[in-house]
Length: 392
Ligand code: SF4
Ligand code: SF4
Image (cartoon, rainbow, N blue to C red; front, side, top):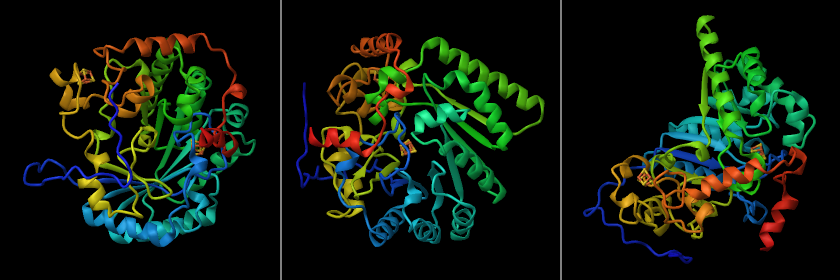
């Protein structure tokens, strides 16, 4: 197994613009303001060792990140976490981003929101709020979130967001324990007046990967959920209701991998709470050292760093990707998924039916089919559990 580890401070690949002008500007900045969160979702995509994070960036450091990213050409911004609402400078940062000309999104559980804060965020210029729901009913939602109050709070905040004039966008992470509720989930979203609903089967990174066997749905669950979603689409259209339903299939049931983040270091960058800069929010799981905004300007990280150049282009690709006609469509799949499944971040993503290691996906489905853990038996994402991984 080949491992190319960068060291810190990381080496530059001596990026040469004259030789390669194919690196475009980052268009998307995801600002993970904090890993703090009052909930404990067992499918959270935050890193397992989030408890070992360094000190969060200060307000001024985040302002500087926003200025640098905008100067590089980024236009879309997501404020995420953890739960970004635990930062009391969120409104200030939204205002700064808006002033700079970003289109701003808040990706939130809804915890920490209230009517006053929604208005303050609106005054700051926030363009868009996406609230996540865990399930259709309080019992399942409480078991997943580790909070009895969360579900009612989310529903109240979804209504308040809509009342404040925002388009209401709901995100529901689907997995084996709630996917059979999809009919009720969609009915709830209709009742809340959602404009768009993302029914996203959980992708298996971070805590979701840890709990993979207990989360992956069966093929028949997935097929039934897709059919129900399609039936709702037809019903909503017949009733003249303009609610968009997006159903995201889990990678483990796809024939080909996704074009992860539109390609490594192509359009997307994530800045984590301590200022580490990643090509996607899961990349911290890879055996590489990523630079931080505390030690290097964003521009230099994007164009020159070893980590951002590591999987650009196709020279790094193994067979069968190297000879494949689809290599510029999916870029060989997801590097994090390849690493989590094979231990080799340069491998063809095993999700691909052409991968020599595709059997790992079939084995994962079989493992999940034999797993009968309840929600209560999944590992919750919290600081105590995270500390186990910090010691390793
Ligand atoms: S997935 Fe759940 S635990 Fe993770 S940040 Fe979101 S709300 Fe918090
Ligand atoms: S072999 Fe590689 S490039 Fe071809 S479809 Fe599969 S993952 Fe994509």
